[in-house]
Amino acid sequence: MKPDRHEERAAWAEEPEQEVGAGSGGDTADELMGDRGGTDRFPREAQWESEGGAVPSGDSAEGVVAHETVDYRDRWLRAEAELQNYRRRVQRESDQVRRAAEEAVLVELIAVVDDLERALRVAEEAGAAESWTRGVALVVQRALDYLRRQGVTAMDPLGRTFDPAFHEAVLEMDAPEGSAPGSVLQVVQQGYRRGERSLRAARVVVARRPAGAPTR
Image (tube, rainbow, N blue to C red; front, side, top):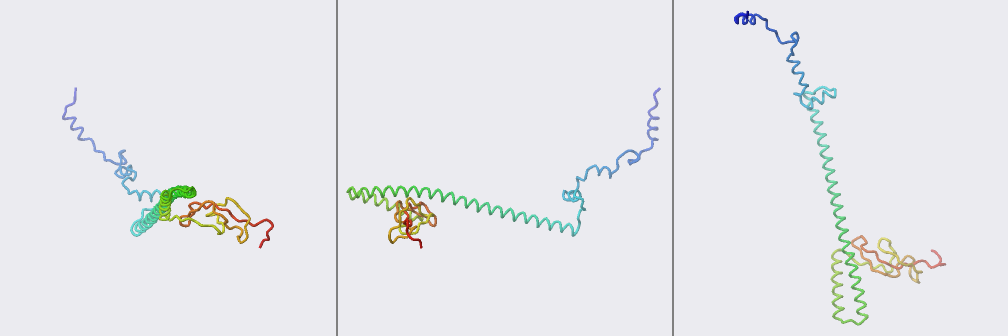
């Protein structure tokens, strides 16, 4: 026989209510909050606690902020210095590449001038028409003017002391009377310089001390 519905309701109402707590096998509010693993804390506070230190407060917190400010400023200054060094290095490399390209073109132009000057000498010796030689001489002069505007000047080492930075010795000869050993006796090929740099070394004949000559 099934129990009456009114009896079931009365039995249910007489059962005592259980409190949520440690004794009832439930979780307390503190335990529930502890399960979050401290995710509601600030990252800096979690780092301090992980390193075994206490979370600073008041004046100590201001000191930490001041220290971090100095650290960030130092890092910024270092990054700025590295950037400036990088910019200077790139500019220097760019200037070197540009100068090398310019000098390569100038050297080729100097070779053309040499060819025209040789052709002009041969034409004059062969008795070529004056109008032709005058035209070639004008082309040579214009090329030399352009080189001069680019800072290129011809070197005249004749009689000067041999300088390996600007001269290339192709032959040595005994120094004649009145010439010092180590001086340039003859210029085989004209040399050119651009500023303080040798653009094309002059090919020269250098005087040497004659055999058996007394040393001074």
